[in-house]
Length: 491
Ligand SMILES: Cc1cc2nc3c(=O)[nH]c(=O)nc-3n(C[C@H](O)[C@H](O)[C@H](O)COP(=O)(O)OP(=O)(O)OC[C@H]3O[C@@H](n4cnc5c(N)ncnc54)[C@H](O)[C@@H]3O)c2cc1C
Image (cartoon, rainbow, N blue to C red; front, side):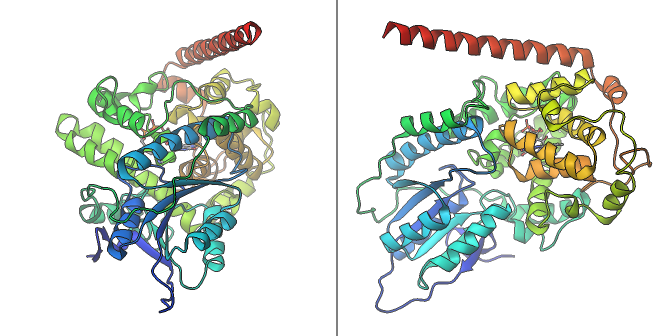
């Protein structure tokens, strides 16, 4: 049983740096550097920051650093994120009276500079297992003064990653029991968050959101924003349990029956964009799903397996495996079998450019690629087929992995996520999977083919559905452009 510090279990917090108290220095404010958990509601990192501030009777601020470049994010991902942050800024300011500061540049400079400027004693950060984030934090620990403490709070996983397991887990089977055992301890109610006791003295930092969003989306226009996916915490809650078309309120039943049918994308929750940007808490999703379990136990159990076990397994892999996005990160058996078959003759070899433009001889694969490029979210079942075919059609597993990650991160609204790296590693390198009957190119890696898809769902129906969808998106875009040009001519 973990101890509770304030309102959080101590297991949820890791002390990255213990500040040394000096008598000549007063206790300064608390700063929460928000990165992965971009929400006000149900956010353990924000709750911890406010709690620490109240206990020390000091003010608290939230800061966000916008990098000039983060893992190739384009207008699609950055627009969604910034529009969500714009709403968060207003929510923090008006309902909680907590100031929000937005910085641009390198976090390793902006965050220590701000800590120094405001004389903060405690920096709270949320948690991400990705190597870039780990490196920034190590650097920030070195750059802030000795008196500053740094806490990391796992606000993303239901069971904090380091509590669930202290090692790299082999598969869902090896982590499931560990997580399930700890759920009663960590699935607790979120406390109500009120305005902090002590107010931040300085005036509120102004962010010119409109100009910022225009500039960022113009720069990343190669991959445009999505119309169908509304950003922000309210939109996320609507997708989870809204009265119009909420997953738990209206669509839950089909999850157990139709979630592997790419022709029925609404059978899936559609929560991945919100979970990726932290606009909704996985713990909130799990708690609400449990409340309706009696209505549809099979669907809820399957959803919780994906939402908790599979998602937290992906974080475990990226945290404990430094080579989480390369062949070096595969298990020994998988590396061997892939290398044994690296020089097998391939029926087709495509370049990255041909794949990106969906110019293959397989209409099913092309449809899934176009779904991702234009709609911005490929169906979960197709993602497996899509990545496995890239292994089949490129010169070797390392190249296949690099191309799949490049395309996934560039076009998926939920890309650049541990789930994405693990999804590609599972499909191409057998991570968290087992060995299967040996065959050409794949070796013992699980194989998927067109005929198998044909047996599972209406392949022609899916191809026609994507064609229609892409046609409509292109038509709407042309209309928007036409209206914009008309308006400009009238001015
Ligand atoms: C090659 C490949 C690439 C992928 N890329 C990404 C990615 O970039 N970002 C991403 O979030 N997911 C990725 N996935 C995992 C999965 O396909 C998506 O999470 C899912 O399709 C998202 O849709 P949903 O939220 O409607 O799914 P639901 O089935 O409703 O799932 C609910 C949530 O559970 C989690 N989840 C579901 N399936 C998985 C899984 N297999 N592994 C880990 N967590 C899971 C996600 O957080 C998801 O949002 C990838 C899978 C593969 C095989």
